[in-house]
Image (cartoon, rainbow, N blue to C red; front, side, top):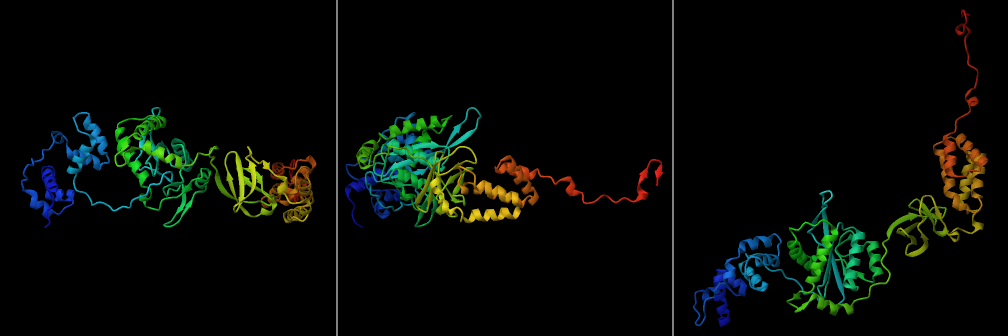
Length: 488
């Protein structure tokens, strides 16, 4: 058995009254239990047995152990004990806690992550939540914690929100960029459905709106792999810090608004960024100053949120959106296009090409049309949909045929503009009789009211004439004819 150094022998004697177990001392020093046993009872000259500081006897280490098991941080417990006891610096308190801490599972093996200034920001939501009391109703509202952390400086931003929906997530990311002051090269997100529409082991598919957000800020989205939190260790560490300090410090505080909670969190973040990171001998503010020059400037124009949907181009060269109609070039009739929209603008794409742009119209039933999207006039007479509509109207009756022709020939409107109206009129045949439609068409022509609602109302109000119902005089037998004075 190799002989250990005198310093190691002294360390055994120092830990002996603290740990009171050869196995614990061996594990703490990283040597074998046999080596510890060899020097356990040895008296080293000129070495006084280690004396346990008085303050350690005043601490209930089992209570500390149980609180940390519940998620309470050592820093929080230290601050609480400091209110009633005279304690040394936090590092000594933490060291003695580790000596008293009960055995847990062995250390995990992990790889070192290279820190490159300005490269990556990690984002995630914490599992723990905070409660907010609505003083007006007494309702308890649940606030989610969003955290964003830079990988190089460990500088982090956090805020509470009521949901994790996509608009809220993007707004939180925007707030993080503005709080930091610049934009990194990569953004590492969790595989939440708000950012990723489909997550597989080797491939992820970004939500289109989240992808638009990244393009606007010129940042590359790099979602973490499924079930691999170690892909974003810095934000996980930041979440742990906030849970262990902020959550525990204010666990007995009642917040009555989201603004109050976020203001308190902001004050905590300002002070926390000033703390020195012992392993790096610098604060997060100091490290951020090194990292900022390597990051990109914020865009001048704020990001606008858009939604997406699929539409099929109608034969009248329009797509329907929010009960209004927007034109698309004629060559895309019958094809599926992608519509990108918000409350102000609507963009229409076929595959990857932008084919139409319109301002969103207010109201219902309005057409927003670019006349250049219609076919040339020489193609109108040969248009299949117009000729088919005329043929169907001819089968219903002369009034309907004349009505359809009149609608197609209406001044100031391109013939295809009224195609939807004609389809609606011809579709009345499925619910009403030919006579009713002919009657409505005649009434519309006479009053020059060619709109669909008037024609539909006339069709519904049609009643056959009385003479059409009487085909012959009733047959009465004379014996049943009653005259004054009796039967004949």
